[in-house]
Image (cartoon, rainbow, N blue to C red):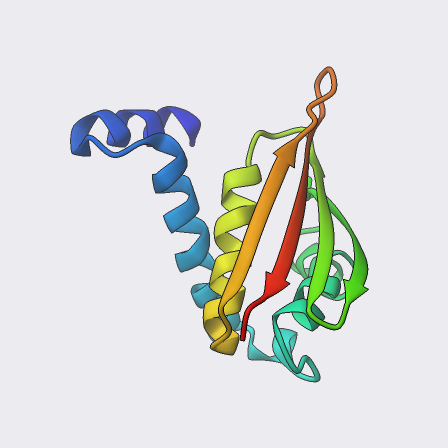
Length: 134
């Protein structure tokens, strides 16, 4: 997948990170339209993001038992702010960023997302801070 995105980046002269982030936004919309029950009971972006590792990935594992999914841990800072840590063997934190932004689009909310990568050996680790603006 990475080779295909790099090739596309060269072809369309758009940075790889921009393409991967855009795909993540699109992917969230596709997933939620195919599996709307994933958002049931979630009132907003932060509620949805808190459920990713537990509820959403549990459902994904039912469909794809051998899937190697990233891990997400969250901590609610306030009613409008959440930290989320992405941990994976794959360098897809930009995909995660796109999914976060796609989630906010789904709920019609404006968010400010900052992120810091703290990669360790063969583990990719990114801490996101998501703050609702609306």
